[in-house]
Image 1 (spheres, rainbow, N blue to C red):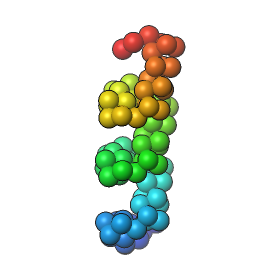
Image 2 (tube, rainbow, N blue to C red):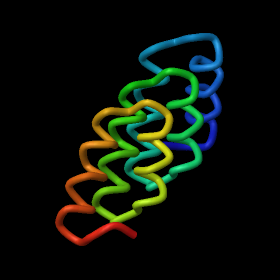
Image 3 (tube, rainbow, N blue to C red):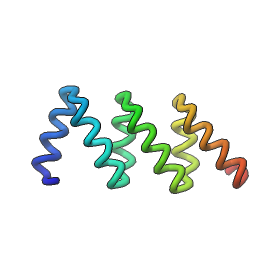
Amino acid sequence: MTDDDLTELRAQADQGGQDAIDQLVELAAERGDLEELRRFAAQGSTDAVDLLIELASERGDVEELRRLADGGSRTAAEVLAELEEEYGPE
């Protein structure tokens, strides 16, 4: 994907284009771009939240899981509880 393609997708996403948002969320996850995923999650993308949880659990990123759980994500809270059960609280 070229820079021009990304610029166009971002413009479509800024106008509320759900397909563009979905593509950008997937691209951010592939790149491991937590900041962009956080931005989409803050805008209400449940896919971005799910991918943040997935990346955080793969990395053992307890802080990110705690941030998501504190923000109301039940899934993040469950994953955090599982990690703490397995490895003990951080």
